[in-house]
Length: 350
Image (cartoon, rainbow, N blue to C red; front, side, top):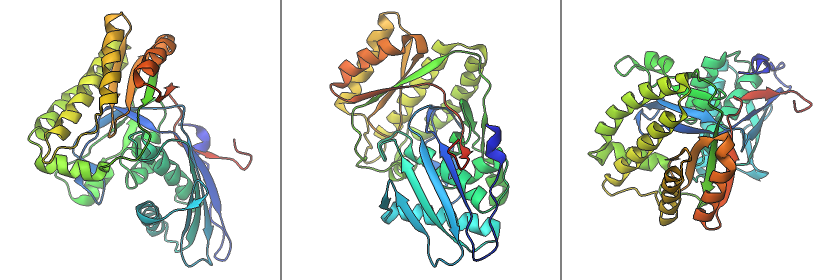
């Protein structure tokens, strides 16, 4: 993680203000997280592994105001309302409790990724908020502590604290809550130089009809396929780590694709079913199969939404993007590489 991330901006005395600005990128899980065993602490049933992207940054400013009576939150220049505001204020309450400071905050966040469309907007959002809020309130957290904190806003945000590949440890299942909380965090995953790219086909940038939280709960509670998938995901993670370490992009892609399709199968098995895969998604998935038939290493993954991400070698990214763009029939296509972890910005924006 960049060195400047540990340079914290400490609050001034009561009556003044202090602030910090952070930026974070979304990550795309190659081994999926789906389902919480503890919804208050955001503890997952399974461990997961992701690649942080070098596109779609979220930039968040947290400014303390000892005189304010409530938090003020703006999202892309518009005051936050409803569930978005509730989640941010609840997160700030957690930070205030840990810091022992009652000061309210002015939060200004700018997100460049479509929200609620399965493109990890909450991962970049809460990773940036965690780093900025921890600095503004003077928590002095290291990278592991920031990952634990970000997890309390959005589970996948724990991984966006780190750049490149990162694994989020599910943690101890049988320990007391405080111990389980400490045991669940993300960490960097060593990988050989496979020079990967993710081609992202946005077939629908709109919000999902069923939120991830509702879909997770329904899947865990009602799908007979969830437990077998969760068990197989443990083996997928072990194989994925080994494939990354030896630089085997084809093995990484094969594992990622089967893990993602298995997760969507568990959702289709829920009662009632949760179906994020759309006809447009299937067309893109078919184009990925054809790319492989043509000798190009390309493998699909999908999160909680209809949009498809295609893992390939960077050298093949333009060709993959061309094929996927045709299949997406007018949908936007983006090409991403591995990105940085969440970090603080200096006053000049560096």
